[in-house]
Image 1 (spheres, helix red, strand yellow):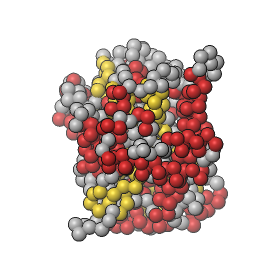
Image 2 (cartoon, one colour):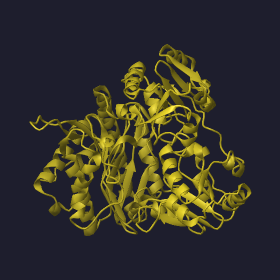
Image 3 (cartoon, helix red, strand yellow):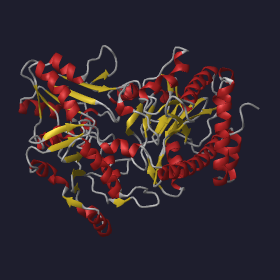
Image 4 (cartoon, one colour):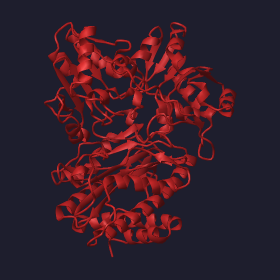
Length: 609
């Protein structure tokens, strides 16, 4: 999407005129859609339209004489670049001196100020927090119908791609079993109704998939689940006849997508609605305000996070396919680098964009591949210091000289979702780069080897991966691990290994959960390092002190030992690395041939020899 003159007098000027017309003191744009998705359809990229900042997380606040963009440390360098030349101030969220957006509004706006935000894209939990603070300052949070449409004449329509069924053998759950499990959870809350807005929960519950949201195989829809009824709010012409008939057999009633609010308002007064305040918008909450409300996480969050044994078996096969694709890619990459290093070489240069293209091609040659699971991050040297860096045709680096190339990528397959980060040397990495790489590797190994009581909150394990960095006075600004879906969202809750998350039951690590393990280290203007595998919580040996879990590493791809300072590794860490590489070799050799096979053999040689 082109951002017309964003922040340079065009979009911001029109926005400020609209503020004056409606008697508003400020407008707030979150990174959200009516389903509170992480990746947004073009229609809801309002924050990007008015700011020019293209990152996936941020909040824009605009007043008649000031504008600020809040984003976290993953995006500070990118945001600074995107905002260059605009009157928008970068607000570095997380700094002690930087007030949160709602706190800034309360401090800087006068009593009586009216603040616009789109209630269709505002989580209930955020609304409650913001409303309480603004009310205390004598201010009001308001919605204005069609406010954004009036400023965006050519605003894209809702996506309407076909919706399809996730079929066996890759779909391992029966739709009726998932519906029954969620209804059991509803009964525990004495709920008559349960509204599901989050797209991955809808897709999981009904064994349906789509392509409305970039990288995630989901589609725009809501589910209203009653004690004995299931209503799917979606435009039914997006489903073919056989799919509609099978949904009908399972008791699923189809209603138009746009009918949700009216249907909620018709529910009998006094009945009980179960909803998730993190995954439900203020607009939806207003539509069922006449009901009794029970707030709790969507039951489907935990149900889909704990993968079935049959799903885990599919994921293991998926990881083998993904690993074989990566062997092909890295074999191509090293050969391409060699061919371009000769004097007088006329071969086309390798750039960060080339990396994205080639790694996607390699995956696309594998059976059951559907799409990338997120935008590939290929970041050379200084670009690697931006954790969520994105190369563009206008701004990207050529891969040449000496340094480190960070590649964070993943694939959506019918039998699983992958997410992996590797750092490889280009030319001759320096001693400090090797030391940084090795400390990150030590943290990744430490978390990989953890044993812990079942139900341990994920945030408690975050320090395990940071300890080797902390010992050297180093740290990183993002979490260590996120949940990963089963042919669903690459970022999935409820579990998280992050010190920023609350330590409570909602973040408990349970058997069958797949989580990323990705410590990192970033030196602005120099390089960045992140090493990431996906790990599965499995049963540990029996103990007299309760049920313990440990991690099985699912990802299968060599870790480049040329970047290691071997003097920093302990014998048990070297043994773990050699054992991991032996497993990678054994499982990927049958799936590789030619240069990819030779690359695999070369990169899985034991370190201890």
